[in-house]
Image (cartoon, rainbow, N blue to C red; front, side, top):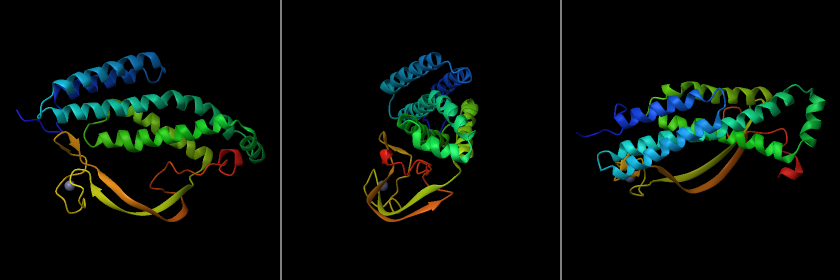
Length: 232
Ligand SMILES: [Zn+2]
């Protein structure tokens, strides 16, 4: 039997989804140790499946691996998010004058942590989870995705929505054949002999910087402390 890369009915994918469901039951209670145990087990199962896979089943192994790595990434930020949520709640309750003072006086570690959690959120939701969603139904972990998206609402409420937008021109090349991806026959995200086709950026050049509310890259958020000299 030939397997298709996007075939979610494969027993291995089913098994990964079952593990994701079990993992998710420990999210609301923040039982980090239990979640870690399940994820470690899932990663070991992925590695074992990958080691035994042939040309037909390798795409399934890759798919399972991506799914579990997306989950691991979401897991990493759940604990951080709860910690930062406490800081942000305090901040949002301050009046304008107190906020100014808070920005000037709060520890560098706190501010860096807030920025880190935002970066992790963007990577977990925009890049990892949304990317695997193209191949795997995320229903088993929908409540976790929703939980992470709530993080976005929380940041927007506290800091508003203003971002830097950087305009860059560049050329692109296909990672498989190195030619222009618009004219070659490889499909972005598909595997060729076990290697994923991705569009590579070649020769990037900065053209302009602007302030926008709907950025391409949400990691470029403007922070109230962006002009604090010790953070530059
Ligand atoms: Zn190509």
